[in-house]
Image (cartoon, rainbow, N blue to C red; front, side, top):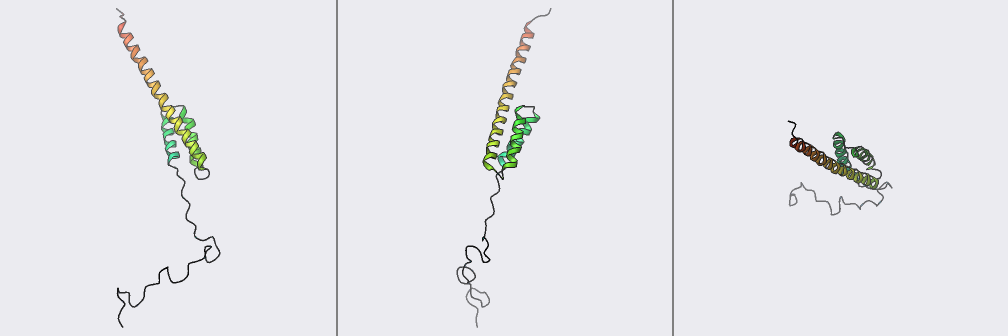
Length: 128
C-alpha cells in the first residue's frame, strides 16, 4: 500500500468546510450567544494629548491651562462610557490650549516691544 500523493502517511485530507460536520447553529452548540468579536478599544489619544499639552501650559503659567487640564482629565475618564462627550471635552481643551498659546504670544510681543521702547527712550535722554 502506498501513501497518497503529497505525503501525509495514508490519511486523506478533510472535506471542504472544516472537519466534516455541519457548521454550528447561530447561537452556538450550547445555546449561548455564539462568538462575540472583542470590543474596539476606546480611542484615548486626543484626550491624552490634550492632557499633556495642558500640563505643559500649566507649567508655563498659562491661566487657561487649568480649565483645559480639568476638561482633558474628564475626557480621559469618559472615553469608554460616553465617547461623544469625551470628544467635546477634548476639543474644548485643545481650543483653550490654543487660546493660551495665542495669548502668550501676544503678551510676549507686547512686553518685548515695551522693553525695546524703554531701552530706546532711555538711550536718547542725556543725563549729563
